Image 1 (cartoon, rainbow, N blue to C red):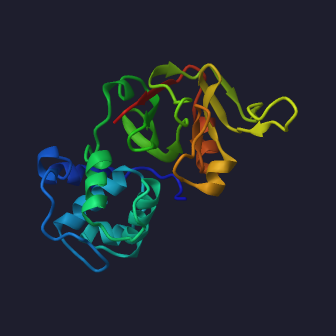
Image 2 (tube, rainbow, N blue to C red):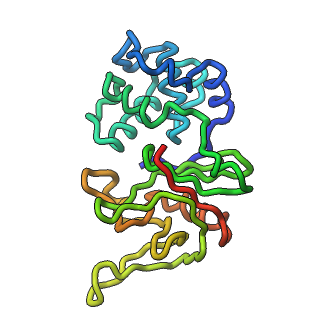
Length: 239
């Protein structure tokens, strides 16, 4: 599971200048697919800019040279694992199409994420939480959502309560309470919080919460918890 990171603002600015984020450029499959280790091209650059926007770490040397190196392979594998694609580390047409679907809007956020000093902006399509401070993304975290029937609600909310040591009784009154530390409650008993189960198991078909926004990165969510005061806007949307 990757760690949280600040989005590369310079890389995104370059991407926008190159038209990497333009939906019109993404409709036709590139002729040089599949991409693999040692490839170097503008298609590699497009993949990297999208992965960067989705929060994956890659070496600056690879990003600066449009080079498909080891850190790009690792990012692609994490992306494939997250969206239940074959984990090959290569970008074939299916991986390209999924990247196009969830990562093509490089640098673009809903207006609701940009109207206040700080916002927790949660994209259910990309399965990421972005902490937006002064209209800039300063942290990106992988998240998972509620299972079918217990879906995480979309909409505009506010953090109304914080609990560093929160627990849940979802397993029943006779069972130990489930830990959900660093909880930021924003809609009834639904919160952004650390999930030991998510951290241990990662993404898998059918996996999910009882409606909460689970975070697997303990260090990342504890840092977020300390930044967010009660009253902070939480915007949950389909990207």
